Image 1 (cartoon, rainbow over the protein chains, first blue to last red):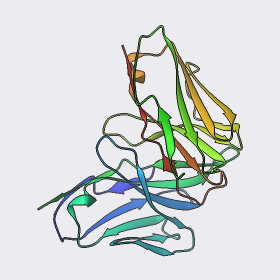
Image 2 (cartoon, each protein chain N blue to C red):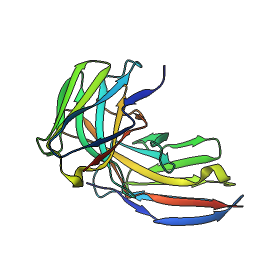
Image 3 (spheres, each protein chain N blue to C red):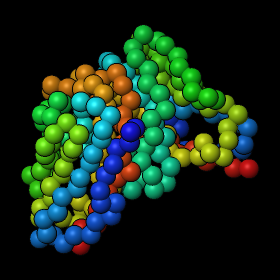
Image 4 (cartoon, chains in turn red, blue):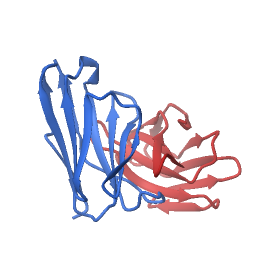
Length: 112
Length: 114
């Protein structure tokens, strides 16, 4: 089942902060976050396993609320290089192995 | 080596052609995946290989035929495709089919069916 992401798009000025949300109606094993720039492959940012942990990667961090089946990605002091489409992916057990299903994505544009 | 390598980068094929996409990784990852991505859409899972065996087929039409000859290599054989199959085909790998690890994606093959 596809997770729901919000917002669909956001425009930031350099130095501003943003939050991207991801929710699922299904119990999750983990939540992944990826960034994809135009014409390129998705790049793994971080993974959060169930347990309500929070992780950080430079100025990008994320949280996972297992009870609510929600995750949020926090981008602080945004840089031009943060522009791209952010996908959350939820990992569930499929037939014989786990599978990753992506949300529709959030297009982030950082302008000078 | 921390990459997933996909070839070719671009492919144009007719509806009666047979072609293959290739994906290679040397990270010792035991799970490999094929995803299809249309413009402005998220990647959609097609196939999952776990320890070189096909474990998930997301109801993909038989004109797409995956193959995993060894633990480092994944192929996608294409035959009698339709124009609507034009898309970016992404290969990915992860260390463990039981989840809990990030995926490494290749740069993709941009396929155009004419």
